[in-house]
Image (cartoon, rainbow, N blue to C red; front, side):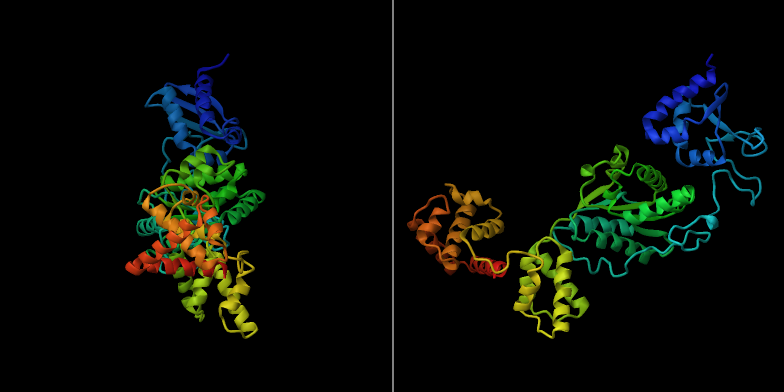
Length: 478
């Protein structure tokens, strides 16, 4: 016959099962046995003290909720730990351990169940701990806000990062998730946040770790039977920065451990900063409860920088490295390297190596040779189609609009300018040019060229636009 304590505990288990992973339920809740129900106090037995400490550290809120749901607001849960001889043991001489609140020690040197000695926590970064967790933050001091160039592509992320740096854990941006393609500055930005926090408050325990290193540390902790020490260490961090969170995909044990660390830090008001190669909603094979937590704060997208931002980035890096790269060479590099800041750095380093090792001046010819290893459109013929693409991009008009009948001014100007540049920069006949614009005849091309020339004669700003586009086309395919 099932007793009352068993019935209450079975009801609790049904609720718990809905809120934890199957593996966690099997590991931490199936071994528990209900012992006694005394009015509104349910007593359960757990296998050992480690079990008790883990439950109190990670599931105390859930346990409270379940017990109060079954026994009312005054419901309490206590549990016993068997001693080696089989006698139930609690926090003191067989007394029950109350999960509803951590018992206080009677003496200063008497440890509190569920607490731990900071000095004895194993630091996975092999740096001795002290009373206040002291770790090497693993930050690159060269990654700062001062040399992180702001543009439309990253303004949201940089602004949010500065807000977090000024008040870590005290803004709505917790967690802050910075995502985008490779080479767009995610690592630079999150480490800049860490460095700025450290500059403002050197007593903060800040830690940057890649998901690859985090995973390797967990594997070692499991091998050494030291998962608890590993989790305890990470739960004492004030600002945790984890790079490439997408590599949690498919690693369910890692997700369970990271979930517990995340929950603890967030509940304690500690700052969490993550990077990913995609938005949280697009992460695959990661538990929904983790994805939902990643969405609690702010997700900031880093996009490919525009030409002006690329120019500013390269100019800054050239200044830092003390390299003399002529302005026209810098422009040529930025016209051709469009989507990856790391490639800009790669070209710059290659130019420096080439000029140093073979003692060549850094000029356009050398830049073309270096860039051939990064892009494939150098020294190709300028075509009418390519001019249409460049002009359409500048005016933010779809290419297909240039082929259609429309009187919208921005489309008309883009079409006429494309015809003008096609006549000037290609060997195509007037008839061939007209054909590529929706089958128009040569007279339309002549009229468009005259209209563009008239606008250039009367509008200096438009003339500068034409000159800039012509230069951009030459730089891109020279």
